[in-house]
Length: 119
Figure 1 (cartoon, rainbow, N blue to C red):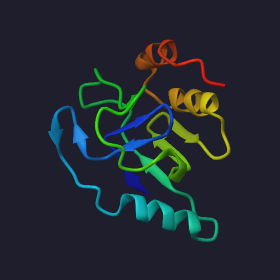
Figure 2: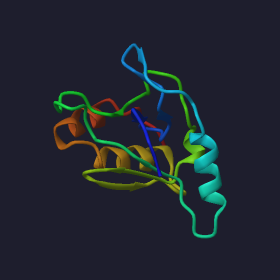
Figure 3: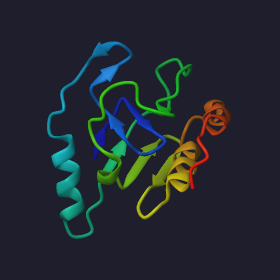
């Protein structure tokens, strides 16, 4: 399991930049998640709080604001305090819908309204 600063509606992970502040390095996140997927019954899990500390900003976002630390193809599950989004074998639309489902309730409508018309 690894943490993130943001996860976008594709399932891409940013674990390096918060706003305009650099807070972490790439480190071993991508390698760790890839190795987890190779293990028998292994899953690449990313866990994060659904919002910033005061709840005003969603950490599930339409597009990550910083560099992509881990690509969507290396993430199986995204977990927040609102549940787990299983991204395995899903279309872009299904990924977005599942990620919106684990976003904080007060941010779900805005995420859904901004969702591109993916197949």
